[in-house]
Image: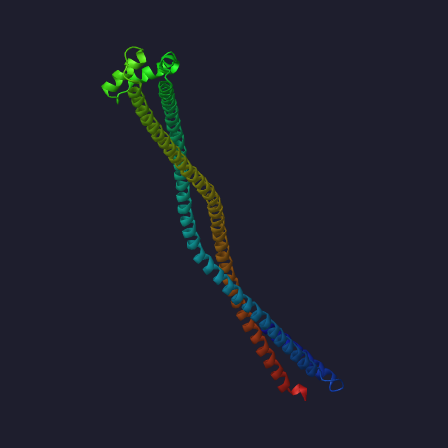
Length: 325
């Protein structure tokens, strides 16, 4: 380019010189016009160079800024990846533990329910046994009481014909704690044959009644204690079942939350990997393009400098020419 402009200038110089020789000094000096044109060309080349330098600096700034931002983004993505992997692994471990906890709570809850069912069955059997025993005891007590009342009224004969007398006969025969002498006296009284004095029989029966009343009190007390114990156990087991149910619900909710968190982190890890790959590729392309731009700019700058020097030399040659005189 510089050589082409120089050749053009020399050609114009030769043409102007020839014209000047043929026309003399009648017209304005054509070489001066050539010099002016070359000076304008020189100014234009310099202006173009300044504009090119300004654009290059802006592009260079863009390269540095973009490159720096990409480098930071890449570093952040590279640091983030292992953190996400670690968080995912920790959350997966937590999720597995939560699932084990839920199974354990569910198993414990079923155990508590089974214990309540078993306790209920035992209590029903105990209640049935108590009801039978207390009913029998009260029937016997009633029979003893009627016998005492009959003896005290002097109506023993009428009593012996009643159902209560039959109940008392069975009781006397089956009682294991009764003294043999007392048993014989009562059997004699109840058979309607020879019997000891009514006062002696009455005393035996009253002693039996007192012992039976005491036994009934103990039976009732034992039953009440059993009922209270049963109710306490059932209440405790119900609270345990409620607490375990609540724990199951809470941990199922946590399982859902942790599962969603893991899915989100895995998506984030995948997105991070994609962004990292794109940023690295873009940075490589940017470095390549910026490097090419720098080489091209330096080459154009060199050519432009050569043009300016060539134009300056040409102007100098023309200014020194005798044809300007």
